Length: 256
Image (cartoon, rainbow, N blue to C red):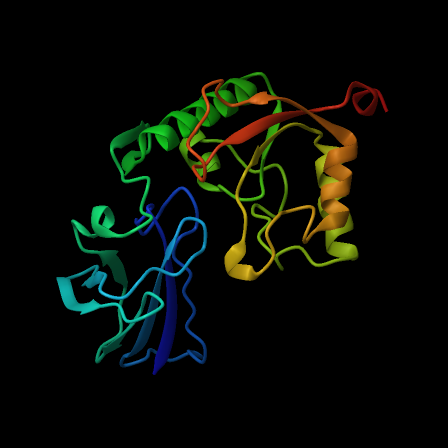
């Protein structure tokens, strides 16, 4: 018996997405295959707030399609009890996004890449395309680009590699002390010339800002060795929508 915990952040409601929107665990699996288990789901807005009751959620099997349908209770939660094990996809049923209060950024555009296309908001598609193009250009010039604190799919869509062993900087990923020192050493050794630093915050972890509310040592290193150059795009985005700035390694740091 396994128990899987899943969270979805509106309005980005895809299994593999621009931000890691699905978190799953199977504790106690051991070396044997489980006959089934419980899948806990919580739907959240992009800013971390729990969604309301009455959101229709569908569980689909990767092998046979739709398995079950449930509506969320208060807090955007629902629970599927599966008799069999396998690979499952949790979706919000079509039409739910527009009906959810606060779902301000419905997927109205397509982000088309060499590795596939996904439906996102118009502003997010433009911002992500600019980030992907920038990473491709710099990679062709032999420069290293690091995405912080998250947005690991930028490496996938731009066909580039993360320059550090740690590829996401969510709360708790980088331990203080030795692990933080190793990450800083890897950044310096490459060296990483550019950062794509997004406005991703973490209300779901009760700490908001990377480098300020957590990972302060790493944040201090980046702030003292890099300077902000420009936003990905000049045009502003609606409040709460994803955006990012390009940061460049300081000239005096390059010469060391």
